[in-house]
Image 1 (cartoon, rainbow, N blue to C red):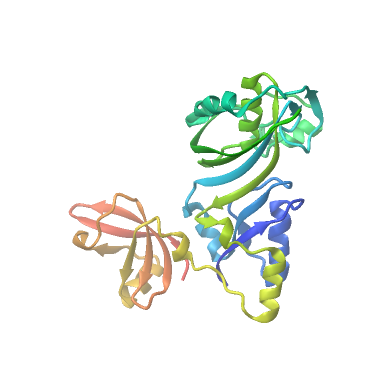
Image 2: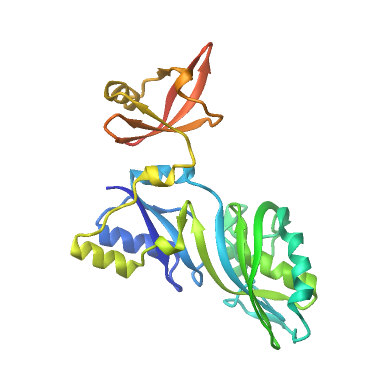
Amino acid sequence: MLGFIPLNKPSGFTSHDCVARVRRLLKIKKVGHGGTLDPPATGVLPIAVGKATRLLPFLPENKAYQAIIRFGIQTTTDDLQGEVIKRQSASHLSIEEIKPLLTKFLGKIEQIPPMYSAIQRNGKRLYELARKGETVEVPVRTVSVDKIEVLDWYAGEFPELVLNIECGPGTYIRAIARDIGEKLGVGGTLAALTRTESCGMILSETITLDDLEKQLEQGTFSLLKPQLLLKHLPSITLSVEKGKRWCQGQKIVIDPVNIVTFSEIIQVNNEMGEFLGMSQIISDDNHQILKPKVVIN
């Protein structure tokens, strides 16, 4: 089996729980995911099956989320799963007051990840240290936020803001919720999170674990082909003979006239339409050479 599943992760499941369930359903050990979602979060969890696990690093990196931020509350985890450490009325807030602040979170920004996160410090996960009551300095990270769009606003004592956020890898939406609340002087926490896009998969095209089980029972299940998720990268088609040589680890000289790309990585197919893997392009004198990087077929 080789391909991907656009899974809609349910709330209460860890990403590893989902991988374990898929392993059992498909009766295959080689299953991985394309980016952790916290247990309370829902939405797109890319699942790779078989040798496709080796293709995860090549999938599109940008992600999109629908987030609900609750103001007037701060927690230890920056979401509603943590202990409340501060609570105050934020009924005076208005959406007109908040909108101008959102521009400060666009572009390249510095962010301190939540203490309860999977980031490693001295060989241990931050959440492991936090659960032991250990206090460590969390390193500042530079992340990229491409878009923040207001979707809804609910006034009240603890008002809620619904946002669409498009961002690069490593961005913590919990940290954005916390930092917006801090700038407003009332505190803020992430009340709900749904990932709407990841690794080139979108929420409207996902399936649930129950859907997967039913499709397997009915014999209608099929994996997404790698080419569908790698279309952001250029591709080259080799003859069947050259394709075999490439799969055996040989370097293949290609005509530069037939390939125009600034990408160092390219997907490789053969004339039969079979996906062979990922190749590195290297230059040697006046030639361009395909050097195998990940051989799939």
